[in-house]
Image (cartoon, rainbow, N blue to C red; front, top):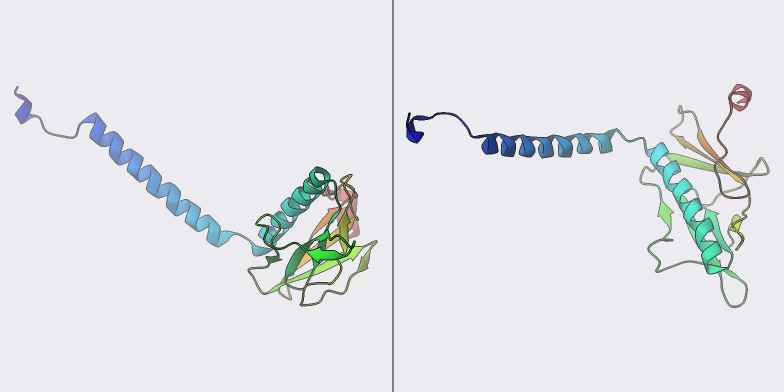
Length: 172
């Protein structure tokens, strides 16, 4: 049988088609995941990450850093030469965070007392992170709409999230 009379695809051609299909399927599945993402969950994950980075950065810089919350997000602060809090600007790591979803309503509690949040950047931050890594413990609640249940993060004095226990869930 001659080489010209063979019919069908070679193994290499089949493998190339499979690789192309796998890449297309992964791109499509990633696109769908971004549509399904809960904006409340994304905002809380971002805050958790930012608090960890802020705590680490305060230790590395050996200077206090801070967080100030608004109705639409939060801002990062540092002390200037005169020991006044100023917002950190021109820093890609600590740029002000704004919620993408305008329906998100935050509430910050320090010592179980709610803080009044304004729509503008605060003059002074509410949460201070010391150079030792210690920080003001706080609770951050976020609600997406009127009928949604609030989701919350409780941060301890070291910036770690306190995971709720079954006992805590029963009390809520």
